[in-house]
Image 1 (tube, rainbow, N blue to C red):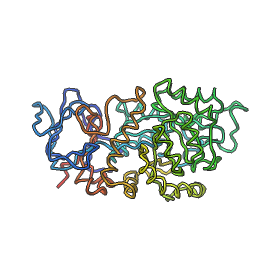
Image 2 (image 1 turned 90 degrees about the vertical axis):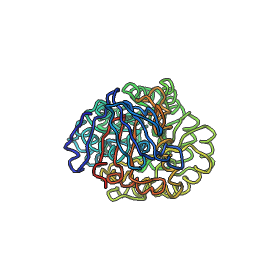
Image 3 (image 1 turned 135 degrees about the horizontal axis):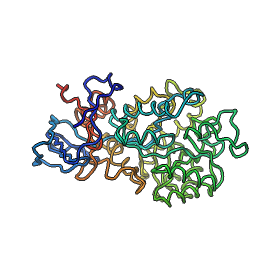
Image 4 (image 1 turned 60 degrees about the vertical axis):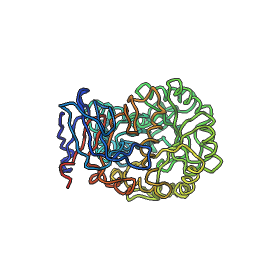
Length: 445
């Protein structure tokens, strides 16, 4: 197996970054592991698991591997599917707002920053993510080719926003492209499309699909991290939103929308949108409508503030924070299909808290339910991309034929979820696509 030594991980003593691609003839046999399969409430008894190429070939006590197979003794630790975060912004989360608006920022520098954070994300155990807005094509291609190290990426491409919408990132001196003919700097960087009217929305959606979007991200309501739009406003007319849905469905995929309020979400449901991002301000009636129309809720566990949060953003976030304490238990009780993601923006230091934010779910879910949410359930949301999914195979489960994205965890996270919050110490082995990117078993007592 080829071994890559990367200078960027020099601070992580004892960590080996191994190739993402394992020869199809190569086998890895895990023995003496207890398995969380993505669904069960208990670990399996100590057993064996065989990886062949990038797939799980078999699970069982009597497995044998070929003579040249690598054998890994799991020492009775937990083998589980890789974690999935369905709401990330790899580029926006890698740079501060001053860095993003700096005149000397180039696409190359933005990609380099995102690549560093993507590698760190994989080493936190996140083997797959859904990027719901921003310039990500170069980063994804680099990871898939082995030039960068990082998780699998389901890309949306540039966000699609109306003028004065949540994705209108223009500086005060930048005027409307429609009237003055010049695209904004954010559009040139691939961060957003400002699209008004059915024709512009169709073009923006198709541009993202042309570059390989696995789903389309539309801004349907106000937000907390944008300058122009109050949180309560509704964005895009029904006709404009339907245009996005029609274009996405023609390509066999779906539209997800940024929205907090009942009015925005109800319009999105009427338009045929399949996923709502956020939704912390929803009422019981709207959540029930989501159940009726089989619409997913991609929600986050937010804190009221973070160390580097802009004061304006903190103030705009207040009604969202108040709402989430009501939304999570209502959505669970009503049977809404729920997925989980972080949605970190403009605060690179916050990325290190990605695993710790999982623990905030304990207010509403058991450890087993949380681990199922982070693996099996989040993988079901990724699967909505259908044929536009960038990777073939099942994720979020440990079963024969599934993709070999695996974590070996020191201890039993079903009994002690805190283990997940310290990946550097407790994730002893990280595998993505059959390749081992971290293995510190030799350093374990």
